[in-house]
Image 1 (cartoon, protein in one colour):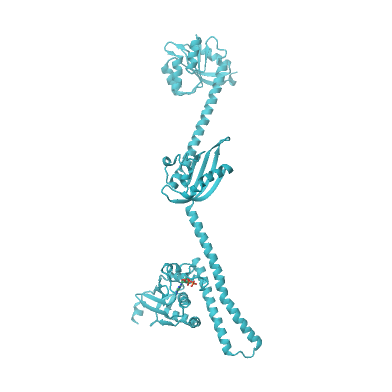
Image 2 (cartoon, rainbow, N blue to C red):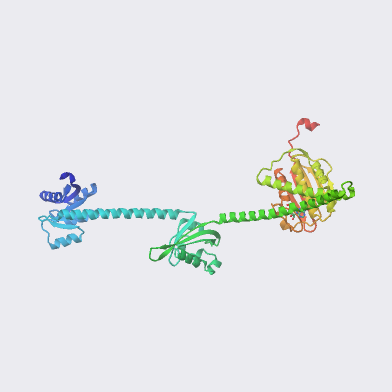
Length: 509
Ligand code: ADP
């Protein structure tokens, strides 16, 4: 029945039309509906092969101007995988052998075509399998090519293979970028090439491969070396490659994590500094508190005992201690609050027309008790008011910190506080003749939590000068120190007056 027949496109190389009909009948009998085109010379064959696609070529063996062998050659030259079957009037053993040698799939005598249909079915099925296979192979090659391109072009990861001996067998762009080695330089080199000399001596490369063999994968974070001898922090993963039976090599993936490591190290140091700060801070806050508790306790006992009349000479030193310790607490807490404000970027200046000299004087009064106790004589050299647009409370913080330090580190020797103005800037000098600061420490002391003295000898947070510098910076000023160890220190603050130019009316007053 025609409707169930499978249509096939048949190219017949045949000089005799009746033979075409014969073959068609045979194919129909086998369940096909052949759509046949006949050619009988090379030219016709080549033309048809180029123009259309074919399921089958049936070819006579001997034709007046062409032969089956030549036809077969043309089909193969056109790189077509079409079943080619010889159908010949006279076919002897020799001819058959010659045809099969040339690559024909089968041969039939024209007077015995009974098995033609069966052979066509087999060859078409084989051709379909071959086509499917070729398609799968091509898809695989495409996938491999894509994968190779991806791996080669990954720039931030080194991805490469080692053979079973641990020698580099493939290389990608990321590996070249991170290590500096080209593919030609590195192929065949042992994995140890990327390890530091000491690590090589410690057999770390072999250990890493052995770990991968034992566990399937080995992860490591370590310093590795580049071609020019530099080093980078590698986050590395080595996996084994097995073909099910034996180890074929290793895949290595690593990336340069140097920046991340540096960040982590900085973070670790910052956390450490913060912890140190917290322990010093709690100690520093407790010391004045303990003293206050002591004095209040003593006062309480007085009141409990003879509440009527506490003689003033007994009271006075206790109250002095109390006020000194309270001053200390206020400075500590103020500085702590400033640190919080500054680090969260919320230190806003509240500028107003301010007399710097008044601020210095106020501080001298405030710290009167501490000055007295220190034994240092403080001289203020400030002949005239110094007016500017500043935050008065912050200016006091600057003076309080510098003067407190001079008292603390000044060994009871004289202290000079000098305030002048020139060229649109105020200049404050706080100079002592105390322990001084080593040249190597002079920059560092302006850092947060940085101290150049042992905590057990001198109390302090190591934040006073940092706060001072932040306030001076916020006023667009500068601070520097001149100091000699054992001879004293001189801190010099300079800040612009920050005043708008005088209006004509003000200028004439
Ligand atoms: P603190 O005094 O609380 O330690 P600062 O930030 O005020 O913190 O000072 C930082 C460090 O600078 C001090 O620990 C000390 O080593 C040094 N320093 C500050 N002022 C003086 C000074 N006048 N003389 C000697 N050393 C000083």
